Amino acid sequence: MFVVWRHNTAFIPYPNAMPQARVQSVTLGGSPDDVESSFYEALRLADIDRLMACWADEDDVVCVHPGGERLVGLGAIRAAFEAAFAAQMGLQIRVVQKHAVLALASAVHSVVERIQVQTPQGVHEGHVIATNVYHKTAQGWRLVLHHASVGPALDLTEVPPSHAHLH
Image 1 (cartoon, one colour):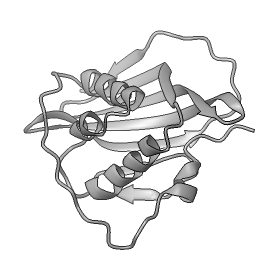
Image 2: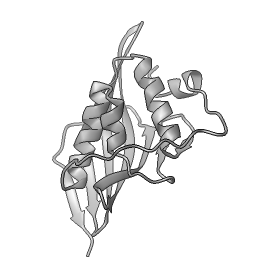
Image 3: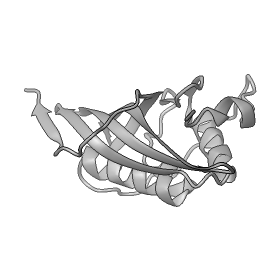
Image 4: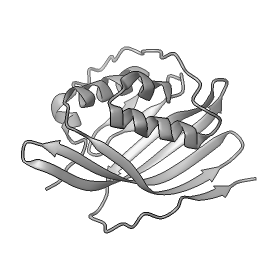
């Protein structure tokens, strides 16, 4: 049985009053694709500062991990990722399918992630269906929502990303 990010509920305490941490935004490039690449690279490297630099510096950013609760605000999101990185699960995530819709100041990416997790019983692989929403801010494009759900067992072939533009 494969469950990814389910460790959220077991290892991460979610106090009612989570402190609201502010992050220093960095220049990540000129597109939502650049931010998304940096986000997944930060996950691969377990680099919390790089990961948090992808998020918009706003109080109402949202993150939902598969099987986890809705996290609102940078403090709650940072705490969840710090706990996941501290668990040292050998988490590897790679986007294998992507559909993107781009408007003037927002973008929505629907992706399928191939996940590998190192456990004491060995490596387990599965798929996660995720939606990443980006807004164009004064600091450039930033992530405002990452919502992920455990996907069904799929035999996916990698396909080139598709992009749609709204006018």
